[in-house]
Image (cartoon, rainbow, N blue to C red; front, side):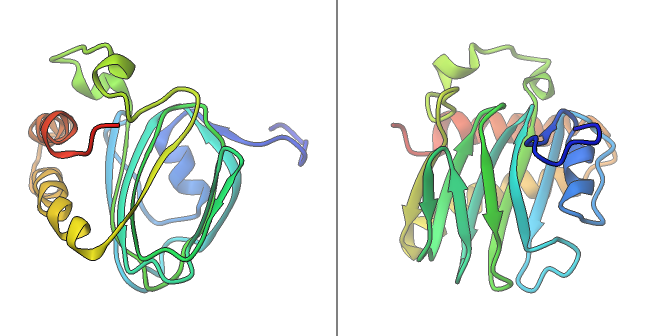
Length: 181
């Protein structure tokens, strides 16, 4: 990235990524961050040009309006609700409509220090070669939202900078609550 505008940025740290969007958010835990996306969220930029990151990403979004997602070689528009899984190193870009709301989770495998699964084998929706993107109807969004809310409640209501309970709830979400490929 040093001085060259033609190179796609790769964010190694969650806080570096959060600063790039730009946002007012920061995490004390370098391995885990939950961001509640709210309608008319003014502290997050609406457009992010292509980038890569060295951590995993899950999003459950509703009321997406004119949101546009670009991943791999795919452009997705005309969204209402969607669920997306992305492994580290994959190319991604977005334009977020102000009406969008939902849940964004950024994490590294190290947040599961208590349990070390073979990540890509255990969770095939995190594919190292491409992003898994699912358009959802409102009923499916409502089915998944309470499980994300459990993770977010544990994340937001702790004094533990490692967010151990939220990490466990995230692991439960990955194992039990999400669609399998």
